[in-house]
Length: 470
Image (cartoon, rainbow, N blue to C red; front, side, top):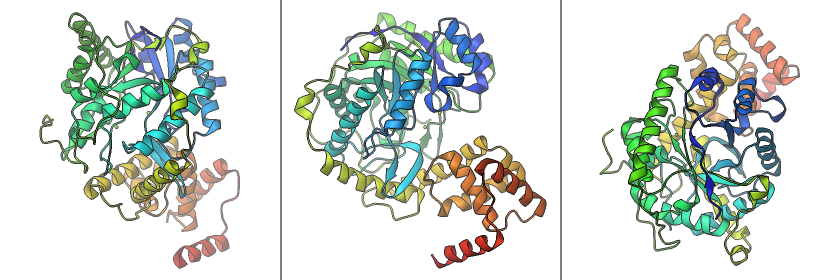
């Protein structure tokens, strides 16, 4: 595996903090959410960063490489276009699934894949498809999770190690996610770090979160806690990370607080330079997973307390060859595995977003917590994409009440922007909001964005009757 170039310490670029990011002292690079930028219309602030030599890495959130379906060629092409437009040395994504095709459902969130042989086979083939389509190397991130899958066959370390061995993909290790999974799934972060091939490390994510009711929520909206900096130090004691990046996605603090967090991160990385010990990787395969319980619950030994010096190859796009290890050995018919993975993911996602029964073996309490979190996130994202809606509906609380009632019976099937339009149409079909002036404003809002006339009264009556019959 080719060595990674040193990128230093960086921050996740977000429009809300674009000006502050430009002024941060000693900033080496930034990461952008790939789906939030358009190759032909890059924000001026990003262009200025590039002009002064700051590297920009696109971080995708919608591929769903852990899903049962093969990657969408259009999504792969879009991610590659952003890499080229930004002059990026690599792109990153997640080890997660985000949707199902039968039934058609969108989670709007990164969900964990089962650590089974079937899921690993599917993931490896999807990664190879992505690598062949992308113009630059790919790195994949471990995600935070509220629950575990029953019947897992591999530990996190075994799963990640074999993924790297079979595909040559790089790893993006999020130490905040390691802490999240310690609290929520009883997993030992040190065991994960000891069990993965750290020579494949592309870079590291650091972020904040909060604990509520024994569940750690990876919010990216809170300061980085000492326990996460301690895990960064644990990783630094094993390897000199090519890059480290601070993620902050909401509730942005003053500029000085961002600078202070970067200073604290830089201090951990620098302090570990004298103590780094050789990285060792655990075996690629072993017996059944023992890192955590089959059903998720707070770890008994967890401390009481969930849109950079990055590692990138020295070469340009031609370095996209990922050096898959003995790839031919693993090529085969994945269709039976895809079918089994698809059935499990569809049952789980249906329980999370469509109210169907929780599949056997899952922690029902944790699934309910996750379902509520997905609905709340859905409401919040739609409100950010369509800030007029809370105003039309009389404020944040009436909006959330109306949206959550809508979400109970209408799973998302086509992304958040379509969801906003579907929500507005849902209200209009029911002659809501009750205030005629507000209803006229909502009608105008819907018409401007949908490019069509809103449903007439007869159509609304017919749809209502169909809904009641169903």
